[in-house]
Length: 252
Length: 305
Ligand SMILES: Nc1ncnc2c1ncn2[C@@H]1O[C@H](COP(=O)(O)OP(=O)(O)OP(=O)(O)O)[C@@H](O)[C@H]1O
Ligand SMILES: [Mg+2]
Image (cartoon, rainbow over all chains, first blue to last red; front, side, top):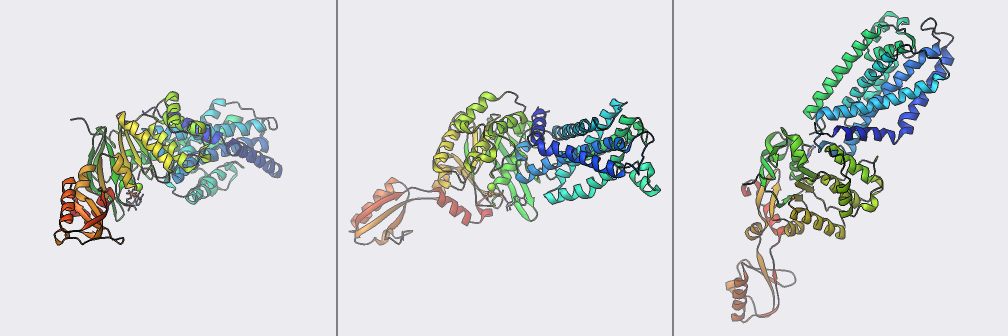
């Protein structure tokens, strides 16, 4: 340990906090817009769980979706910006090891995700009743979901050499996986093929488990979801750490 | 003998077909003021980057104060400060934040007193609260020097620190770096202003196409590859045939006569007098690094090494 971890974490948190309007307020506002539009358009047609109104059903999914996307955006855009502008040398010249580098970027991504997620939930809590019988599950899934996307963001930021490569990663992998993870519907209501496909998507378990925390209901048992989401997180972290140790695309 | 400040052994690095480093070996002793010279693309920045761990050499070892830059990277990087060639900065932060974060990366919690001192010495104190974006190019370069110094590294490497820097600032920069050298810091610099290297550095390595083609004290390089020239303009008479060897005549009519030392200047003047030539003007041109550089670069790099 070099002792450089706290400073790198601080830098990463300051980086998004200084432009909080764009990195925190904007995603909260778009999540609320989704809620208003979809609950209005679909409330009459969809009942995901008996006794849970569609607007209620939407809130945890939208909050988690915002968390996932922002965790990814934080880590990936920070790394690629530093690579392209070249200021990453100041971090690479310091005695910060791969583990510390990983932990700092990951934790900052999780912090941003938690702030955005809390923002979404608090902004709509006075409109939509949210019983939240299981706050421990809420924390567990919030951290794991944000962790998966934080690690994926690191991976994408390290791999991409240009902004459009990162945009491709985001548009063709992250966006479809978040939208098709049961944010707007219960996966149980899908045709068999799509149901099976959704079950291969690790983001689905983060959202499903997160919803369990709010209503005590979910498609999959929360312990199973947490185990699968954690496994995805561990696999991505392992891969990212390996790349960092090898200096892949950072130390030429 | 003390551990060398920097020790490079057989370092090689290829980029596709380009050999950026082709078996470089080099030692810089502690306390030296050392110049790394060479034309564009010679491999200077690649060598410096390998020292800092920004580049992974394909082969060879590099050590900073005895610490291997790969296996003991933590210790090696604490002992080394590098000012990169390109101006880079993080537009999210002010000058002071930049330096506080940089200190933090080295695990230094409270570095305020030293940061204030560097800001003062680099005439940046008035800009401490300014965003990095709002600085001029020369100011950004000074912040980069400050960043390289936050952890008080014993070895400081400056990659073309004076490119695009005005005269006044350049002098201030060199007086500061000289002071650091006097205080015991080892300084390694690259520059394309050869008179800077000649004035500042006691030892010089010249690189070409990834190889070291000359490595010696500044004085010896000058003696070996450059010469003192006696320039005379004659009022009447002509050069005696005995002097003609190696003599050239420039467009303005000056004869340029290579001379070794002061004794040979006298002897040459005596020969001229005896031949009946009258000297109208006379000057002695001291050896210049530029000439050494041009000669070495014109020669086949492999043979000269
Ligand atoms: N990342 C890279 N990818 C491909 N080639 C590279 C890379 N970095 C350097 N090179 C090549 O390696 C060689 C050495 O480059 P280097 O930057 O070390 O030269 P230099 O001596 O610092 O030159 P200058 O005086 O222009 O700064 C050049 O031919 C350069 O094109
Ligand atoms: Mg260079």
